[in-house]
Length: 522
Image (cartoon, rainbow, N blue to C red; front, side, top):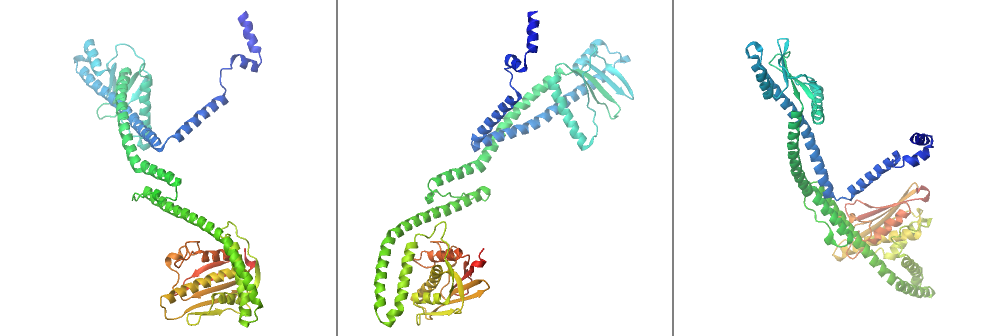
């Protein structure tokens, strides 16, 4: 009674109370899902923490074992069919012996011996449309499964289905072979209607299959280990070791990119690994050069910052002295004094702006619509052009042509281009050139765009310099040059929305400036 009342009380208790009292130890579906998720995460982290050799070894062993399993399963199924076929053959021989007995009445001892020799419990034969039991069983038996081993043509898909069915039968023998008695049918002679059938316990078949499976398993494991080792060693030599070498070199190079000794030496391979090594070596060389250039720029900037203060003071003193020239009544002095003062003013501004090159963001140009011809003449006066018998100077610009640009920026660009041309011609003069050099400047307007060309008949631009022509410290065309002039000019023109380019010429060098008006700049 007490037990029944306790049970009723349990049934009448609320669901949360019953859970608290009796079911607290059972995890919910959500808890099991989270547990599985944690296990998967732990497995994933463990896999990611392995090195490339360990991953390769595990994958190789796993794939080889999978291949061995795919070979093992059909081989066991084939062994089962062969064993059953042997029993059918032995039973057929026993049936022939039994049929040879006069009167067809086989003595019990002979029948038992024939059944024992054939390892079967009963034998029946069908010939000429008549079936009869040749060697009956000693006692009644229940048949648990039937297998027909007679050949039949079922086509490609049917053959695959048959092979899968045989594999399933082999697994059924492993699972149920201890208790089953099976009936097996096989062919007899050439008549497809004739057959022999035997009844046997499945225990002997399971024992021999287990023994055969263990032998195959041991052989498969040995083959798998040898194959996995060979594949691992081959892949390790061909792929893993080169990749580890590349990885070690990348780590070592990152510790000191400026050391050229840390650049990887390509192995000379012509496959993808060799391509990766050559490309890595190329990138490391470029990166090393960039770091060296960075250090050079830093040292140059430090040097410029040191001399900038003293240079500005000297230019300021020169400016004060030049101001006194305006008090001299000489006509020549009065003609050149303003230009001298303007040049000193530009020099002081250049000193103030000398450290601005290379900033991430340049100041926008202060553009105005101005006449171009006077600025070109001013550039020529500053460089002493023309020089009689040495450098000829020609200008093809209409007096009314106006350009929309920053005055100081455009003056710097033209000064750089014309000065480069003059220096190239001076180099030819030093080498003994007989004919005079020639520098020409021409400009024209096409709609809302002005084109300006600076051309000379000097030695031209060397092919090596063309590759980095507008890059700072890399496009120098003469000995002692820094390569800054064209880089500065290209940057200033680009700030206007224009373009500076080198034209193809048969002789000398020609640079073209294309400068759009403000209304056409995107």
